[in-house]
Length: 67
Image (cartoon, rainbow, N blue to C red; front, top):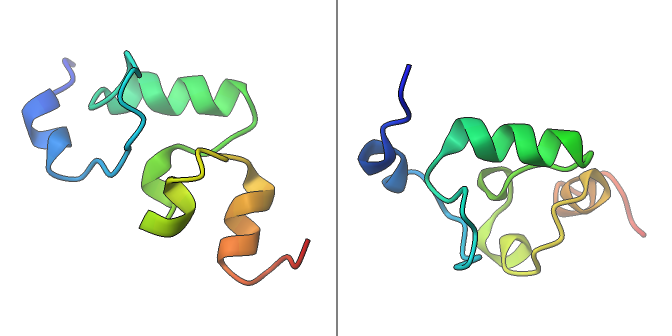
């Protein structure tokens, strides 16, 4: 199955411009999973702009972690 980049653009909130995986969800998911992270689409705009894709940052955003 090929990635449909044009459709993915409608949902992608990633602001990291030099990323070669941008709008290629399958590659993005694998990349971040291998690093123990989550992709940009899991974060709101404020947290996405930090480029901190850690699970800890996600939990902080959700109010489940205070540090």
